[in-house]
Image 1 (cartoon, rainbow, N blue to C red):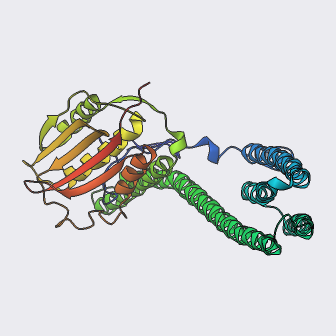
Image 2: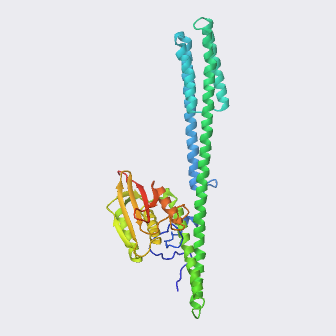
Length: 391
């Protein structure tokens, strides 16, 4: 009989999640202490991360407010000097007049004012520059038709205000959408981690009791039914492990990055899988180096290999190769099996947990996955990884 402590993971067979069904073995991820430990709260009822983020935002807003006041004050001084030049040197009236309006538009582009300030500043600039230009026209320094520039410049400024406010509204909407998406992703990740974590303890307890009942039976009658129950419980346990792995793979900030030798990774993977299968294995794995999380890349490669094993039969060939490209590296898993076109539930739609794990791992590394028919039948799954940094 197999016994275990509730919540302890079972020992898996070689490999990681398959791309299609939860029948393939996988190593359950360790329990996350963050799900059990009480949340630490900062003053005011906020978690430490939220408190730090709120403090950072308030500090950023304070700095932005000071910069805005300095910018506006600098423009007021510049506009006053330009208008003074307009009064002192009548020959510079065209340059000084346009400098006032252009500088106001530039400052507004960097710092959108409130509607009240915008109206006050626009009215003040219009009255001051208009009265000065009218005085020049009365003394014959310019024609009365030149006064038309004042309302025209005001209209140009108002058009720019409209465009700036439209852009600000669009950016605010984009930020709100991004924030909602971020929170939805966090909620989904928390849901997946919590569900998979909470599933493991009752599954282990149920398995232990099913084994006890099976071993207490006097004969073989009923043992087959209990074996089916145990197999289904094992499937549920592996599914819980995959969900934890998927939730962990969706957190690119948690990557433990370092140099990864893809050639050595491919050799280790084949050494694990060769004794457990009756397939023919081919390797083309020179030394290729990338930057990444080796454990997650190994989990992604195991998922692709497990899929190749699932859709091949005895005597079929599975080829693993890696190579350097102009933009990084490629890692291929090619087989001579039935291929995706004839494999039910192959996961091409992206609903398979294994494929979701592979793509989540590659997204965290800035890479991608392509799936295509192999040249000689079967399927070819290719992982694209960015080049290693010069460091």
